[in-house]
Image 1 (cartoon, rainbow, N blue to C red):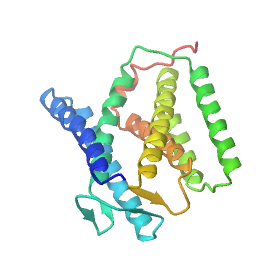
Image 2 (image 1 turned 90 degrees about the vertical axis):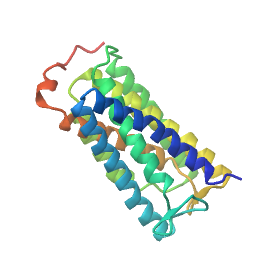
Image 3 (image 1 turned 60 degrees about the horizontal axis):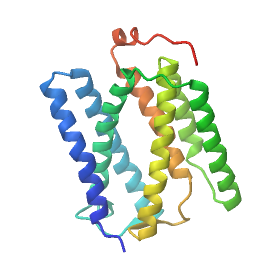
Length: 223
């Protein structure tokens, strides 16, 4: 049986990476990265509190154990974990923006499409309802359209797919161990939603970046 320690460890890992990144950005005077990291971290943590409060208040899911429950229902480890993840996410975005690797956009799109088709085939076969994607898919497409080059687009698609898969395995592990559960059962809606939100946040980070930096990322021919 999983205890609240598992959520605590995830929060410690996220904050353990976020705090050094924030300190490094401050010491190296990386003002844009520091600002974006705090914005995305605060946004991720704040949105998590709102979503978790609505979900637990309406008994859509429940949490059994925590070091402290915000509003009596939301484990404090969750917003800390999402804040830390948001900060790290801003760091990953900065790395993507300056990465020399340029994977094929067609290959990245094909991989994500194949993954989506497989997930939807599984979903249709199981008969589970999916509703949040009605909102998150348009947000994901909006974020994707903000990305300045095919190189950044392909890297972002691969990152979103990887995080969606990671969330699927983490959720299956935590739910299976009994730390919390979904009233209607765990569905692929959750990892797909996170993948779409990843694209949305990447697009938001591009909008936050100074315009002078965008001139550095001209569209390159696709491979």
